[in-house]
Image 1 (cartoon, rainbow, N blue to C red):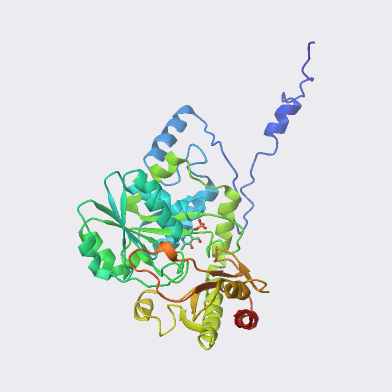
Image 2 (image 1 turned 180 degrees about the vertical axis):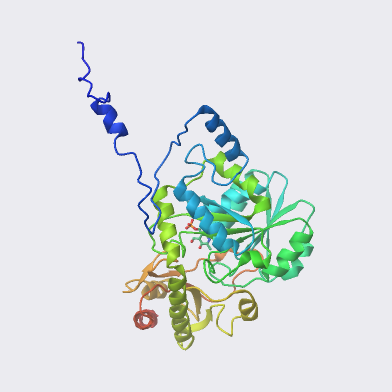
Length: 406
Ligand SMILES: Cc1ncc(COP(=O)(O)O)c(C=O)c1O
């Protein structure tokens, strides 16, 4: 059977071609507050020479150069600019974005380490960071040794000729130890060792890790930067001199994010300051209330004066976020379930940093090898943007249920 093409319209484009080409002109005269969202895979060029030049610039790590959306689009570049400026805090930095906070941990470790290298990692890190270091990274010949988060300048004794990275997280996951980050960075820098920090808790408002001397700041944008529990993303913000190896790894591994999610993080950061201050105030109100409860042995919140590293917190942070833990004097698994399940305002979930309040008992067990947790059952709270009185009433009911289940 033969087919005949539909008659050509006066301007020469047939209907299927019009479907492809119509409406692709963007009217740049109309100024809006927010940037347009660019969804893209292909990036197009006027000439072959332009394609070649753009490719060479992207490989060389030049800013805002892209031959394909895995390298970037106007929307992702806008977010990278914002992250480098905000997190960099006046230090010349660049930012790469990845599809989760965990990817923003694993990709930089792969980018900076080679077989035979040694990594020093805090014993208090986020569990999956430890899991990556002891499994996949180890398979590539990189050995990770854990250190006590209270080590400070004493880290010098653990440095070896092959130490490539000191990996920090302050405060620590679930146990909230504050590290003497500036002291650790000073020692590491003097020995040519790169410092990386998971800056999930304090950012985007209360911590300035590049003032402390770190080289790479890792941000789970999923948490406070996005702020609405509706996306996954992470960033590695690095001093300019460390940009190229990271950027090459990001491009070679093909880790990238879409325009819609990048836009949502840009939107989230506009309100980050007011949200963080509300999270801070609510969490402190709830934490102080918990301190007065008979079931609670201790509250682990760096902004409370009885926190063991409160002085370091006051020196290095300008505020605190909505995440902290409390230790129960005792609790069976059934009592923990009675505390956490059926809460009206606290959902049971692992993440945090959104507008919602969350509760999760800690399972520290094998997650500590150098400084084991010796206290009672630990429960982590994320205080969202709810009214603190409602959160307290909900926890009071939970603690009553815990006692009744005893
Ligand atoms: C301290 C910390 N770092 C990193 C991450 C990883 O972020 P994501 O959930 O985006 O992978 C989390 C997630 O809970 C976290 O708590």
